[in-house]
View (spheres, rainbow, N blue to C red):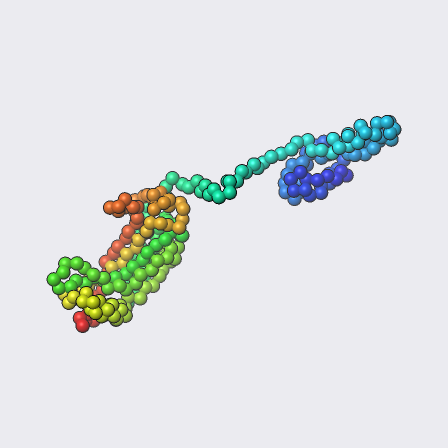
Length: 248
């Protein structure tokens, strides 16, 4: 048997004498190594020829135990200190051609789920609200029921949102009391008989595939805002009459 070192991982290897000069694979790292010639052949030369050729024989021993080739499979040059590492190449575009939201109202609970081709780590904003209008004002204001910032993956499965009117109105009246102290709460004229559900894919996504400010986002469900930003918005109105008085 011939013992030698793997040229890649340094493991001690053994191959039969018949493999001398041929290639054998390291069982540890898989590197293909050339089995060196047996050193016994050199010792025979020394015993026959005498010490006069000792130096030549020593050189022969060294040469016979060298690998037939020296491999270089990696040559990575790092950035100079203080210089940022360039980002890995990103896809030219990230498409969204499907963004379907299922909404079912059961009593004061709203069951919601999302089916989309966007990645699970895509940031997502979900809101549920009702609108109202004040006397002498055409603007519509919001009674907030639910607001959440999470990721697409959470909403692939059914989520249940509490849309209890009494809870929402308590929060609403508490907010109006604060506004009344600074004379910013007008008299309510009308309140919508429906709640609205909204899903928004905002800019500044954590996934670099979207690009800076969603510049790589495209597809059937993507729209461009007036400021040129690429976003996805989905809204639906769900009939849900308000059974409690909002006036105070």
